[in-house]
Image (cartoon, rainbow, N blue to C red; front, side):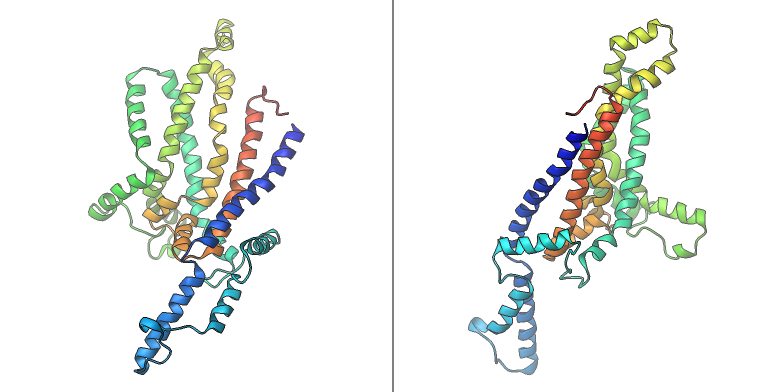
Amino acid sequence: MFNYFVRRFLLIIPTFIACTILVFTILQITPGGPFEMKMMELQQRAAQGGEGGGGSSGSGKGGQMEIPEEAKAELKRYFGLDKPVYMRYLTWLKNIVTGDFGTSYVYSEPVLNVITSKFPVSISFGLTGFILGYAISVPLGILKALKHNSGFDVGSSALIFVLYSIPGWTIGAILLPLLGGKLGWIPLGDLHSQGWEDFGTWKRILDQAHHMLLPLFCYVINGFAISTILMKNSLLENLGQDYIRTAFAKGLPERRVISVHAFRNSLIPIVTGLGSAFGLILAGSFLIEKTFNLDGIGLLGIKTLQARDYSVALGILVISLVIQLVGNILSDLIYASVDPRIRFS
């Protein structure tokens, strides 16, 4: 098993390089990058300056202000465009390995500072959603399995499938104007009320819980539905196995048979999804943070792509990629610990 995990960790390197080469190349060859945006900004400034001065000096064909070739060459050197794409990638990769993620073109700050400043919001939602999702879905899945084909099972399954069929951000886009705008039950935007710093401890907790209620619901609803159904079906399958019948035949109480013998094996399908869940905890959810205007990693990713701030976009890619790859290996470790039959080789 040790050799298996060593190979898995070593495979992170080529996977990381392949993914970053693909994204880096696409960003470099896509028109409308930071160089073109800077040129447009300079032309607009030059045009405004020309209009303000009442003259037309420096204007090119069609009234467009011309930027000197020396300035263009200097800008290309600043953005690294005076080198071929593969040289730019190798330079970027070398800097990443040494922990230098570069500087944001938009925020004029180190990329790592920009990204880590958004971690508290994404982690608070991701971690709370992760814990709540599993804390509710696992017991609910067990209860549905024990009450299989009852009214509770059928009714809860119908509700779960309806919620699963609607993306979380869509539920948020529907409920936010209703509960937040029309009825005023849910605060709009921000994570705290004004003067939150002056509140007492319990009032702070209640205030933050009030602000997080609807975004958190949208955050966990799809994963919660999947985990509940997986838990129910897995437990039903295990309850029909010979070893469970043997345990009942030995006279063991139902609670002990389920909690000791069936429950552990039923967790196996659940733990296989933990790898992707770790990515969601830290990397955030792009659409939900955009819907609720939450200042986390997801919203930062959308803003940086819109502003063509490729250094921050690549920084988010690197962090998300590493978390996802390590999370997958962690899933295998948990998988092996839950199921003693698993022997990686």
